[in-house]
Amino acid sequence: MDKLSSMSSKKFFIANWKSHKTPGDVVNFLESVKKGLQNINLENKTIIIAPPYPLLPSLKEGITSNNLPFEVSSQDVSAFDEGAYTGEVSARLIKNFASYAIIGHSERRESFKESDDFLLKKVEFALKEGLTPIYCVQNEDQGIPPGVRIVAYEPPTAIGTGNPDDPNHIEEVFNKIKEKYPEVSVLYGGSVNKNNISIFLNVPNLSGFLIGGASLDLSSFLSLLSQW
Ligand code: PGA
Image 1 (tube, rainbow, N blue to C red):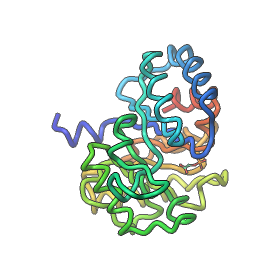
Image 2 (cartoon, helix red, strand yellow):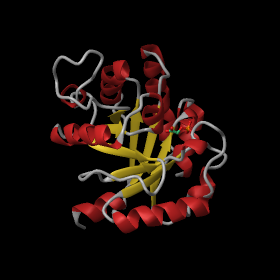
Image 3 (tube, rainbow, N blue to C red):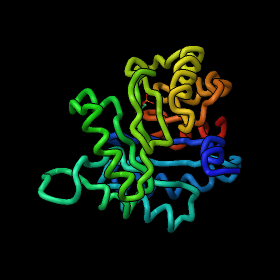
Image 4 (cartoon, rainbow, N blue to C red):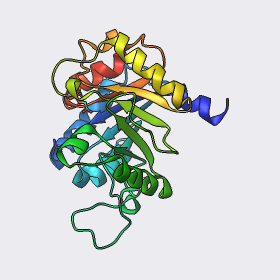
């Protein structure tokens, strides 16, 4: 199997913790999750947790010490290299703690006015430092920067609203994305929870989920993982 087809047959489960959790919460989560994972088939699943920046080191350390099958992602990355950029966190620093970086989430595009050009720089720095971008688009028309292999389709009307997109519409969007970018794995995100995840599982080309609110609670996290 070549590298591209092995990437697209992978199943991604990305937990985006947004601005939630403390160091103590991370310790509790990791200590408790191990038992729950025992009954779940994890074959071919890449499980990625994206905590707030200050929790990256403790998450990475806890995953190693508990021997858990999880990968770490940042929720963002700087559009600049290391330097005089107050408040920024560079890819060069993040790569010590994470292998992935979410880029272009709609909450950043909207609340922080991040443009496609600005996001392109983030992707370039991530790739340069060896981080795998998880690039978010809000519709099928948004461009995807060169080098991106994982794309999360996240319609803003579905994020945190309890109103996920319709599976037929997701299929249409995925088809259009795959027509233009056949090399990418496409994920869906927006109000996926343990009660509705099953309705998305038959969407053609679906390579995974980016889950916010429903990934915070341990039993919900495990239920989602066991159904995917
Ligand atoms: P949600 O968020 O699952 O809470 O809707 C998804 C996301 O924004 O990543």
